[in-house]
Length: 80
Image 1 (tube, rainbow, N blue to C red):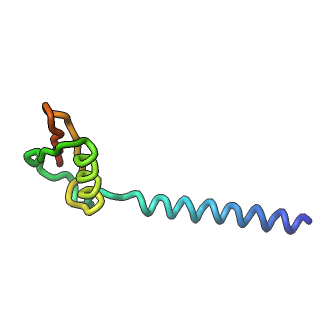
Image 2 (image 1 turned 60 degrees about the vertical axis):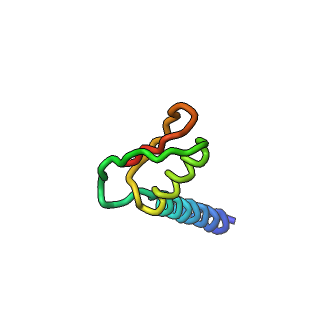
Image 3 (image 1 turned 120 degrees about the vertical axis):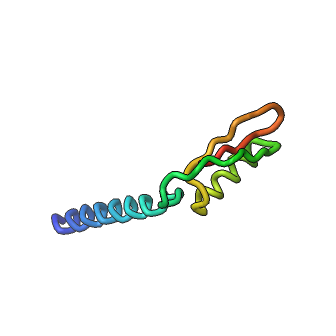
């Protein structure tokens, strides 16, 4: 019984360690090159389109960061 508990405890620790490692490896989305120069904003008709474009470009490493700002009836995507 003692050996079964020990084996389960070791398995649980291994599973937690592996899942933590996997989560840490998959969260990087920015370019490793460092900060980039700010660009002229691109305008979108919805906040969703602006956010989706910014997220996609960040995951592709095309930008370091971004911000969507409402300007009148459109949304501006500011990147750096």
